[in-house]
Length: 114
Length: 111
Image (cartoon, rainbow over all chains, first blue to last red; front, side):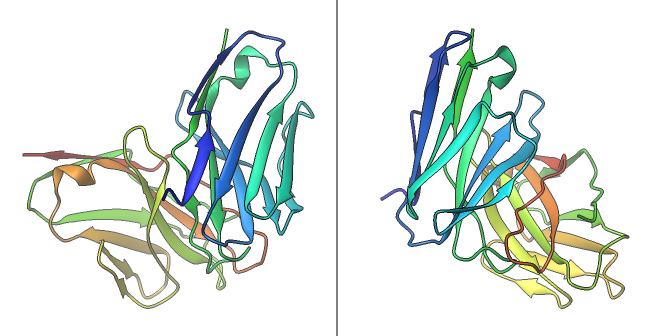
Protein backbone atom coordinates (compact mmCIF):
# COMPACT_ATOMS: atom_id res chain seq x y z
CA UNK A 1 0.00 0.00 0.00
CA UNK A 2 1.26 3.43 -0.94
CA UNK A 3 1.67 5.58 2.18
CA UNK A 4 0.90 8.93 0.54
CA UNK A 5 -0.96 8.72 -2.74
CA UNK A 6 -1.88 11.51 -5.11
CA UNK A 7 -4.26 11.56 -8.04
CA UNK A 8 -3.92 12.29 -10.83
CA UNK A 9 -0.21 11.79 -11.50
CA UNK A 10 -0.42 13.81 -14.70
CA UNK A 11 -2.84 16.57 -15.58
CA UNK A 12 -2.86 18.60 -18.79
CA UNK A 13 -5.39 21.39 -19.06
CA UNK A 14 -6.14 24.73 -20.64
CA UNK A 15 -5.67 28.16 -19.12
CA UNK A 16 -8.72 29.35 -17.25
CA UNK A 17 -9.93 25.89 -16.25
CA UNK A 18 -10.49 24.71 -12.68
CA UNK A 19 -8.84 21.50 -11.53
CA UNK A 20 -8.31 19.49 -8.36
CA UNK A 21 -5.55 17.23 -7.12
CA UNK A 22 -6.36 14.71 -4.41
CA UNK A 23 -4.11 13.37 -1.70
CA UNK A 24 -4.65 10.55 0.77
CA UNK A 25 -2.36 9.15 3.44
CA UNK A 26 -2.85 5.82 5.21
CA UNK A 27 -0.19 6.40 7.87
CA UNK A 28 -2.52 7.76 10.51
CA UNK A 29 -0.67 11.07 10.50
CA UNK A 30 -2.17 14.26 11.86
CA UNK A 31 -0.45 16.77 9.59
CA UNK A 32 -0.54 17.11 5.82
CA UNK A 33 1.19 19.50 3.42
CA UNK A 34 1.16 20.71 -0.15
CA UNK A 35 4.44 21.65 -1.84
CA UNK A 36 5.02 23.06 -5.32
CA UNK A 37 8.13 22.27 -7.36
CA UNK A 38 8.58 24.57 -10.33
CA UNK A 39 10.61 24.14 -13.50
CA UNK A 40 13.76 25.29 -11.68
CA UNK A 41 13.24 22.45 -9.23
CA UNK A 42 12.66 24.67 -6.18
CA UNK A 43 10.35 23.03 -3.64
CA UNK A 44 8.09 25.53 -1.89
CA UNK A 45 5.64 24.95 0.93
CA UNK A 46 2.14 26.07 0.09
CA UNK A 47 -0.16 24.85 2.85
CA UNK A 48 -0.18 22.69 5.93
CA UNK A 49 -3.12 21.21 7.81
CA UNK A 50 -3.13 19.67 11.26
CA UNK A 51 -6.22 17.63 12.10
CA UNK A 52 -8.19 19.34 9.37
CA UNK A 53 -7.14 22.79 10.58
CA UNK A 54 -5.06 25.11 8.40
CA UNK A 55 -1.79 25.95 10.17
CA UNK A 56 0.47 27.13 7.37
CA UNK A 57 -0.68 29.28 4.49
CA UNK A 58 2.24 30.70 2.56
CA UNK A 59 1.88 33.51 0.05
CA UNK A 60 -0.22 31.62 -2.46
CA UNK A 61 -2.81 33.18 -4.80
CA UNK A 62 -6.42 32.90 -3.66
CA UNK A 63 -7.04 30.73 -6.70
CA UNK A 64 -5.50 27.90 -4.71
CA UNK A 65 -7.78 26.44 -2.07
CA UNK A 66 -6.88 23.43 0.04
CA UNK A 67 -9.62 21.32 1.53
CA UNK A 68 -9.27 18.68 4.22
CA UNK A 69 -12.45 16.61 4.62
CA UNK A 70 -10.74 14.45 7.24
CA UNK A 71 -7.22 14.11 8.55
CA UNK A 72 -6.34 11.42 6.00
CA UNK A 73 -7.15 13.62 3.02
CA UNK A 74 -5.92 16.97 1.77
CA UNK A 75 -7.11 18.08 -1.62
CA UNK A 76 -5.90 21.04 -3.65
CA UNK A 77 -8.33 22.93 -5.84
CA UNK A 78 -7.03 25.48 -8.33
CA UNK A 79 -9.33 27.98 -10.03
CA UNK A 80 -8.69 29.90 -13.24
CA UNK A 81 -5.46 28.09 -14.04
CA UNK A 82 -2.56 30.14 -15.39
CA UNK A 83 0.55 29.15 -17.33
CA UNK A 84 2.67 29.78 -14.23
CA UNK A 85 0.78 27.14 -12.32
CA UNK A 86 2.53 24.48 -14.37
CA UNK A 87 4.61 22.52 -11.88
CA UNK A 88 4.82 19.30 -9.93
CA UNK A 89 2.71 19.37 -6.79
CA UNK A 90 3.72 17.16 -3.89
CA UNK A 91 1.57 16.14 -0.99
CA UNK A 92 3.22 15.08 2.26
CA UNK A 93 2.25 14.01 5.74
CA UNK A 94 3.88 13.79 9.14
CA UNK A 95 3.01 12.27 12.50
CA UNK A 96 2.93 15.56 14.36
CA UNK A 97 3.24 19.17 13.35
CA UNK A 98 6.67 19.63 14.79
CA UNK A 99 10.35 18.99 14.52
CA UNK A 100 10.21 15.28 15.26
CA UNK A 101 7.85 14.65 12.41
CA UNK A 102 9.57 13.05 9.47
CA UNK A 103 7.70 14.01 6.32
CA UNK A 104 6.49 11.33 3.93
CA UNK A 105 5.96 12.58 0.39
CA UNK A 106 3.77 11.35 -2.40
CA UNK A 107 5.11 10.79 -5.89
CA UNK A 108 3.83 14.10 -7.16
CA UNK A 109 1.21 15.35 -9.59
CA UNK A 110 2.57 17.00 -12.71
CA UNK A 111 0.28 19.81 -13.83
CA UNK A 112 0.73 21.28 -17.30
CA UNK A 113 -1.29 24.35 -18.23
CA UNK A 114 -1.47 25.13 -21.96
CA UNK B 1 14.29 30.13 9.11
CA UNK B 2 18.06 29.96 9.23
CA UNK B 3 19.65 29.21 5.87
CA UNK B 4 21.95 26.45 4.72
CA UNK B 5 24.68 26.47 2.09
CA UNK B 6 25.51 23.38 0.07
CA UNK B 7 27.67 22.77 -3.02
CA UNK B 8 25.60 22.69 -6.18
CA UNK B 9 26.94 19.32 -7.26
CA UNK B 10 29.25 16.48 -6.28
CA UNK B 11 30.48 13.36 -8.00
CA UNK B 12 31.30 9.97 -6.59
CA UNK B 13 32.19 6.48 -7.71
CA UNK B 14 30.18 3.44 -6.80
CA UNK B 15 31.22 1.64 -3.62
CA UNK B 16 33.10 4.70 -2.33
CA UNK B 17 32.09 6.82 0.66
CA UNK B 18 30.51 10.20 -0.01
CA UNK B 19 30.68 13.20 2.30
CA UNK B 20 28.08 15.85 1.58
CA UNK B 21 28.80 19.11 3.41
CA UNK B 22 26.35 21.71 4.66
CA UNK B 23 27.06 25.07 6.27
CA UNK B 24 24.53 26.66 8.59
CA UNK B 25 26.38 29.40 10.42
CA UNK B 26 23.19 31.15 11.64
CA UNK B 27 21.66 28.05 13.20
CA UNK B 28 19.80 28.68 16.42
CA UNK B 29 19.91 26.50 19.50
CA UNK B 30 16.55 24.89 18.81
CA UNK B 31 17.08 24.17 15.11
CA UNK B 32 17.31 20.54 14.10
CA UNK B 33 19.38 19.57 11.07
CA UNK B 34 17.40 17.47 8.61
CA UNK B 35 18.52 15.76 5.43
CA UNK B 36 16.19 14.70 2.67
CA UNK B 37 16.92 13.48 -0.81
CA UNK B 38 14.96 13.48 -4.04
CA UNK B 39 15.55 10.75 -6.57
CA UNK B 40 14.73 11.57 -10.21
CA UNK B 41 10.98 11.84 -10.85
CA UNK B 42 10.12 11.04 -7.23
CA UNK B 43 9.05 12.92 -4.14
CA UNK B 44 11.61 13.81 -1.48
CA UNK B 45 12.40 11.16 1.09
CA UNK B 46 13.72 11.50 4.61
CA UNK B 47 17.32 10.49 5.18
CA UNK B 48 18.32 11.48 8.71
CA UNK B 49 18.15 14.28 11.26
CA UNK B 50 19.98 15.37 14.39
CA UNK B 51 20.40 18.16 16.92
CA UNK B 52 23.87 18.03 18.47
CA UNK B 53 25.21 14.49 18.48
CA UNK B 54 26.24 12.45 15.49
CA UNK B 55 23.50 10.14 14.24
CA UNK B 56 23.52 6.86 12.35
CA UNK B 57 20.74 4.97 10.62
CA UNK B 58 20.48 2.34 7.92
CA UNK B 59 20.73 4.92 5.15
CA UNK B 60 23.50 7.25 6.29
CA UNK B 61 25.38 8.96 9.08
CA UNK B 62 25.16 12.58 10.12
CA UNK B 63 28.23 14.27 11.58
CA UNK B 64 27.51 17.57 13.31
CA UNK B 65 30.29 20.03 14.12
CA UNK B 66 30.77 20.89 17.76
CA UNK B 67 29.68 24.51 17.19
CA UNK B 68 26.77 23.21 15.04
CA UNK B 69 27.61 25.64 12.27
CA UNK B 70 28.19 22.85 9.80
CA UNK B 71 27.28 19.23 9.26
CA UNK B 72 28.16 16.40 6.91
CA UNK B 73 25.95 13.68 5.54
CA UNK B 74 27.94 10.50 5.00
CA UNK B 75 26.93 7.77 2.63
CA UNK B 76 29.24 4.91 3.51
CA UNK B 77 29.18 3.11 0.18
CA UNK B 78 27.57 4.96 -2.69
CA UNK B 79 25.43 3.03 -5.12
CA UNK B 80 23.94 4.14 -8.42
CA UNK B 81 20.62 4.40 -6.65
CA UNK B 82 22.04 7.12 -4.39
CA UNK B 83 22.21 9.57 -7.31
CA UNK B 84 19.80 12.28 -6.22
CA UNK B 85 19.47 15.84 -4.98
CA UNK B 86 20.34 16.00 -1.28
CA UNK B 87 18.79 18.75 0.81
CA UNK B 88 20.15 19.97 4.12
CA UNK B 89 17.36 21.74 6.02
CA UNK B 90 17.13 23.47 9.38
CA UNK B 91 13.84 22.96 11.12
CA UNK B 92 12.74 25.02 14.09
CA UNK B 93 11.59 23.23 17.21
CA UNK B 94 8.11 24.66 17.03
CA UNK B 95 4.83 23.02 16.23
CA UNK B 96 3.44 23.83 12.85
CA UNK B 97 6.74 24.34 11.07
CA UNK B 98 7.26 22.96 7.61
CA UNK B 99 10.43 21.97 5.81
CA UNK B 100 11.91 24.85 3.83
CA UNK B 101 13.95 23.44 0.95
CA UNK B 102 16.99 25.12 -0.58
CA UNK B 103 18.74 24.22 -3.82
CA UNK B 104 20.43 21.11 -2.47
CA UNK B 105 23.43 19.19 -3.80
CA UNK B 106 23.05 17.08 -6.91
CA UNK B 107 25.04 13.90 -6.36
CA UNK B 108 26.17 11.91 -9.40
CA UNK B 109 27.41 8.36 -8.94
CA UNK B 110 29.48 6.62 -11.57
CA UNK B 111 30.03 2.89 -11.97
